[in-house]
Amino acid sequence: MVGSRATSGVEVQLDLAGPRVRSGLEHELREAVRQGRLAPGTRVPSSRTLARDLGIGRNTVADAFGQLVAEGWFVARHGAGTWVADRSLADASAESLAGSPRAPGADRAEAALRARFDLRPGLPDLAGFPRAEWLAAARRALAVAPDEALGYGDPRGLAVLREALAGYLVRARRVAASPGRIVVCAGFTQALELLGAVLHDRGATRVAVEAYGHRLHRDILATCGLATVPVPVDERGAVVAALDGIGGGVGGVLLTPAHQFPLGVALDPARRRQVVGWAADSGSLVVEDDYDGEFRYDRQAVGAVQSLAPDQVVYAGTAAKSLAPGLRLAWLVLPAGLVDEVVEARQRRGLFPSALDQLTLAELVVSGGFDRHVRRARLAYRRRRDRLLSDLARHAPQVEVSGIAAGLHALAHLPAAGPTEAEIVARAADHGLALEGLGAFTYHEPARRGPALVIGYGTPPDHAYTATLARLTAVLSP
Ligand SMILES: Cc1ncc(COP(=O)(O)O)c(C=O)c1O
Image (cartoon, rainbow, N blue to C red; front, side):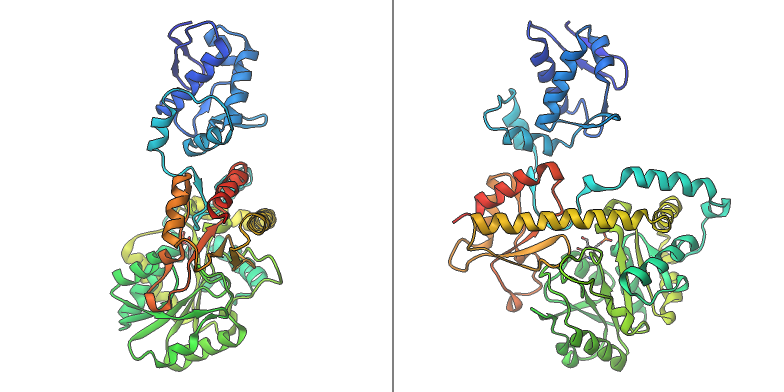
C-alpha cells in the first residue's frame, strides 16, 4: 500500500509501507498534520471511506483514529465526523501522555510551536462556542429577514439587534437602555476608538484610565490624540476621588466597574455614585467597559453604573467573552446627546459589523439561546475557577488568589520573597505554559503591586484544563 491516496473527503497522500498497518497509518496521519498537509480544522474522511480508499480494514482505521483523538491530533464529534485538531493542543496532549512513544520529528515540530498550555487572560473557552445554536439562529434569522436588512442599513446597527440588546441589557445588566441609544460596533476596540475620536473632536486632550488595564486601550486612545492619566486602583476598585484634582482637558474616565481588569475587584457602591457625580460636575463622561459582566459567581450580579446616570455614562458591552472575540460584535448604550456624533465618526470610517452576524445575534438573544448559553458557560467557568482555587490551595498554598467573584481571570499573588514574576513566567514557558504577570498590565510603576500572575482560566479548552493546571501547580509549587 505504497502511495495510497484517500480520494473521498479531503485529499491526502499517505504512504503505508511495512507490515504494521495500524501504527503505520497513525504515524502517517500524525506526520500529515505536523507537516501541514492536513490543516487544523480539516474534516478527515470517514473511517469507512479511508478504509476503502486504502484497501485496509475499517476497524484498523477506526482504531487509528481513536488513538489520534486520544492524543489530541484529531477531534471527534459524535455522529458528525472527525476533524484535525488545533496543532498546539495535539502536541500538548501527546506530551502529557506519559510514556507514549513519540513519533520521529516531534521535537523539531514542537520547537516551532508556540506554548502548548495557555493561561493568559483575554479569551473565553473558544471550544465552548455554541456552534449548533448559532447556526440554527442564523438559519432562522436569514429565512425571515427582509431584503432591506442586507443593505447598508441603519448606521447604529440593525434595529432588530438593537431592540434585542435593549431588552437583554435592561433585564440582565440593569442598564437604562433603549434601541435608539444603542450603537453596534465591531468589538469594544472599535467602540473605544469612536468614543476617543468624539472626545477629541469635542476638545478633550486627556482621558483618565485605571492604573492597571489593557495596554491596547491606552494605545487606541493615544491614536485618537488623547493622553491617558492613570487613576490608582485599590481593593474597592478605582480610587475615583483622584479625579477631583486631575486638571483640565479630561474628556472622561474609562473604568471596568463590574470586574476590574486585571485586578478583578468590583467598584464600591459609594465610588459609583462619586464618579457619576464627578462626571456631572465636570461635564465629562464615564465609559463603563462591561467586558465580562455576564459571569458573576458569588452573589447577585453587580448592576451597571450606567443605570445611576444614563446621561453621564457610556455603557459598553461585548460578545468577546460571552460568545467569542472573533465575532467582533460589541454595543454601546450612549447618552442621548452623544449618539449622532458617534454615528458620524463611525460613518467617516466606514466600519460596520456584518448584517448577517447582527441578525443572528438578535435571533439568539430573542429566542433565549444566548441566555441559555451564558448560564451554561457560567457554570462551566465557575467549576474551572473552583478547580484552580483547590489545586493551588493543595499544591501551592503560598499563592493567594483574589478577584475570583466574577469573570474569566483571577489574580494569583506570589510571595514577595520567592521568584519574581518574570522568573515564574520564564519557568512556565520552559514547561510549555504561557502565563502573564501583572506587570504586563501595569500602567506606571508607582502604582505597581505584585508580584502576581493574571490567570485566564477561561482560555484552555475543557480537555486540556487538567493538564494545564498540572503545569501551573508544578511551576508554582514551593
Ligand atoms: C478589559 C477588556 N475590555 C474589553 C474587551 C473586549 O474587547 P473586544 O470587544 O474588542 O474584543 C476585552 C477583551 O479581552 C478586555 O480585556
